[in-house]
Figure (cartoon, one colour):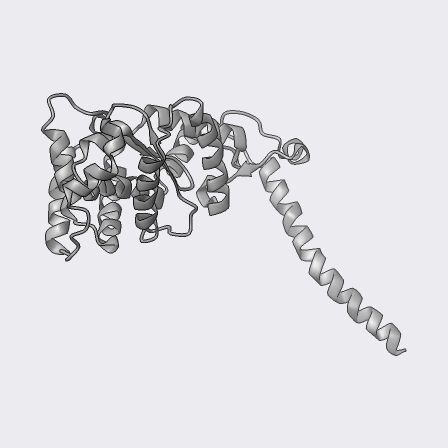
Amino acid sequence: MIAWQAFLTNYRLWRRRWFYPLISLVVALSVCLSAPLPGRAFDLLPLLFQGVQIFQLSNISDRQEVDLGKEMNQQLSSEVRLYRNPEVNRYVEQIGRRLAASSDRPNLPYTFQVVQDDSINAFATLGGYVYVHTGLLKTADNEAELASVLAHEIGHIGGKHLVKQMQQKALESGLLTAAGLDRNTAVSIGMQLVRDLPRSRKNEFDADQRGLKTLSRTGYAQSGMVSFMNKLLGKGSTPAFLSTHPATGDRIDALKRAISSQPTNGRDGLDNSIYKTNTRALRS
């Protein structure tokens, strides 16, 4: 009798444990397969059976974002020429990691890479991947100015700006389905956006403010961000870094106001001679 009662109790617990999750899965699949889909038909079950990874960009996890960023990095590695000097790469990596630790998303496995290109440019993709051109490294006069650029790009990652752009692009193109995006489509859209370097006024202001906070928390001089932007505006032709970044003058004014309202004692990175020593390989 006792054994029979124990069996019934265990059976009820087992049924409760598996019944409701099973019902939830069936309902979720029914919604995905029956919901009206924009642009093109989407059959989820074949993709599931093929092992295709589906990304829901509206609530993408850090792990999924890093996974997409890794694949984008592999494609970019065949499109850009990475600068291989170990001293310069270690220096940039050191600055980047110092900033990332004080950023909005410090738990991402950040990767900082130097691109051998004389244009003054820097960009970020997904999951902590940041790229800076040798032309920009040569243009900066000190570590605080370089750190301000890296902090700005980290700010884009903190705000998930590229993820949001990818979602909007997929929606406009009719590629976003009720289930989300498959891996290849997501990477393709991300790469297209990175190549085109689209910049919205809202995202740039947000990345500036996030970057300034990161710069301040890390102890770098806030003036580095303003001085670097002013330096670029003073050049005869518009650098790539600014040509895709709208309203630069307004951004500088906004940064000055933010610095005035929340000044810090940070003075790190203003020694020009130390910076030149650490980047001397670029000038040899």
